[in-house]
Length: 260
Ligand SMILES: [Zn+2]
Image (cartoon, rainbow, N blue to C red; front, side, top):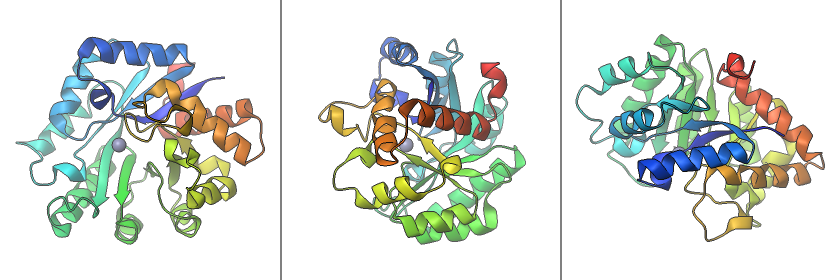
């Protein structure tokens, strides 16, 4: 079995650079053959990139998350442009809208989101999308602005009806550990009924720890728990599901050569 964690905040799991290396190496021993490292701001991105640059199985998304809307940092656009030239940069992200936390006002969030969608188009990269209580606005914007390389609705948290609208845009839907929670009926319904060729899997570590590890801090090596849960839900073989999700990830992030 081989797995890819499409979304992990390595820098938030542990601040210590040595521990971060241990976390990604341990994940590899637990069959997580690639990790997409996500940062919320560019300072964190460059720090984690530098620390993990020897780790050829760690890929990176670069972008400014809605949490940073009030302070994206000086020269953030040119920093993203420079960042996209680095090795193993596979997406712009995470970007999106978060109306739950009320970061800045809606208009500034929307402006930052659209701006980065346009950058993704310019730099020929897909996007990793954060949506919290902003579902309709996210879809309306993506109908106009989704870059050619596509996008992931990460840490999926909407219902199945919403998923169907997202699938019409050819978006990918990525499930995190919260799909394993007993009362997450909307997520179960979505994971059960959606087409497998649009599904991805992630930890969103250190958050959203799978039910089996409740109370612990999530990390990429726990990814398999979420796959096991979805396999059981869909009444299919874990290995078969894992391989399908692996293929989806490789294709979405265009990292096939890495596994040749
Ligand atoms: Zn995240």
